[in-house]
Amino acid sequence: MPERLTFGRARTSENMDKIIAFLKNKWFRLGISILCYGYTAFLIWVAWLCLGYYMILENPAPLFILYLFVNMASLGLLIYTRKQVVTQVNTFLIPIAVLALLVFGFGHWFIIVPPAVVMTISFFAARSNETLKTVFGTIYLLMFVVGVAAFFAIQMFMGKISFTGVDLSRRDASYEYVSKSGDYRLIRYLQDSGTRKTVSYYVEETKDDCSIPLGECKKVIGSKHLHTAEYENLNDNIVEWRTETVDGNTVDVPYVEGIRKENPYLIKPLEEVEE
Image 1 (cartoon, rainbow, N blue to C red):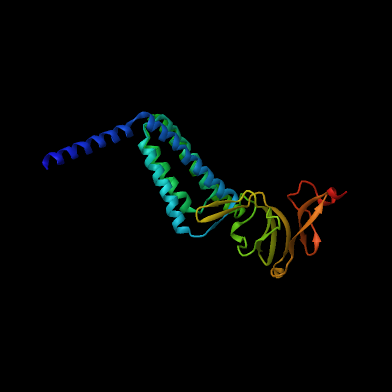
Image 2: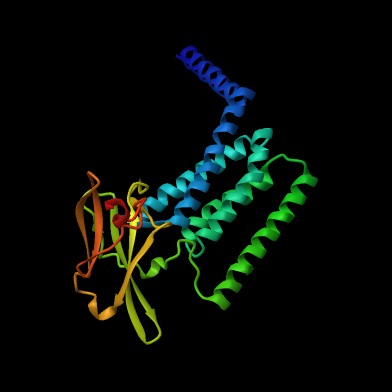
């Protein structure tokens, strides 16, 4: 029995040595370093979603846990490969992605904080040249300070800004009118400028919408203004989609109060096509 136990321990120790040797293999670490660039690309993608999309989250809590797991797992891989030159270069790129995330997603701290933690720890953990790290660290710190200060200054003197051209906080989540083809949708925004309240209708394309785990992202950037009406007409069917045949093609045409309007996304105005 003791001999079997000793043999089992020796075999276990041998297997552990093989695993450790494999994890220390420089080519394996190089592969993991390259894989970590996927995290940088992921942050850029999230920043793009914050810039141009309206996010509808079915269940925010599990989604945040998943998002947190992705960030913490990536941090572990970045620390594991901190001696690799490929990772060292990556740690100089991640702050740029986080800065974009901060600017485009400002106020959504549950999205910004996890990558900011990953950025800070991985930057100091990487075995980069200390002089180079000091220089880039100073530059990035100034970029973040100036960026945040400029953002607050613009908000203070020019009011709330939006890179999409619309204030997503005023989007009417209960209203969405999709055309028959499914290529376009009408969305309305409730505007309150002092004593005058208005309702603004915008046309959005649906082809660039994307799905995320436990949610959906609808592209807003590039939306086209169609009509603005008094707030009192909120419950009226002011706008509608109709399908018409133009030059042998079936197209979606918006109507406002019974009057045909040009679809902002058509290449040519309807009147020009019909001639």
